[in-house]
Length: 328
Image (tube, rainbow, N blue to C red):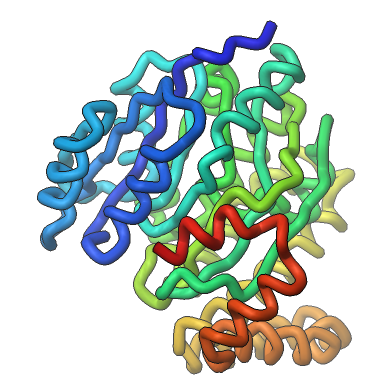
């Protein structure tokens, strides 16, 4: 049964996000689906983030601010989810952006999938610190996807997901123990894997999320994120030994991805260490992916604004609504 007025809880974990939080909240406020409970969880910020949220809340009464001592992204998300009784939950990082139709399209996909569908995700674009698009992703996994999720994190990021609360609770919420083990970064992957054990996924094949890659956001700590990934994948190696090859390949892909991320963030030492690790694990893959690493780095850091805009307009017309939002 389709409920166009279904309430969606939107949780925004925030830590020192004064440069981006206004744009993020603007993209949430402008959603076509209006029945939103927007909870910003300030995870111990020391900058002007909270005052910016307060000014946004004066313009949109759906926005409210919660504050907590710094406890990490998993705890912040769980606290925000616990503060709303919405049947559906969406999470967006305080530097990412949503296209206006994001929630409406994902909500319809989940509702059409029935109670067996626990998570809807969408295509996303990588954007730089100035909101310029430099890479687009178009995953297509749908239905029962546990093995495919073991092979790769096609959902890509926490800002792309819309969850049924029942799936979120059954998965045990976000796992704060990763932070305690100095291994933050793959809470989203763990959530997706645990939901995939019991529920179907639905994909909305449109670019509806701008996922920002900078050298200051949480996932830029690539070494910690690698530890996080190793812990998460080890859990599923033990539970599903039949997917061991998929999980091993997933780890190789993650090391490559983190090396690229380190390059984009200017962390040259970390990029070299990760590339070395990748070469030891799989020399053929390491060599074959060098051109891809250089290409993404150039598009993220070296290609001028006018060229990024021109390429996008010529080749990615379907992404224009999100690009226009990011360019404000």
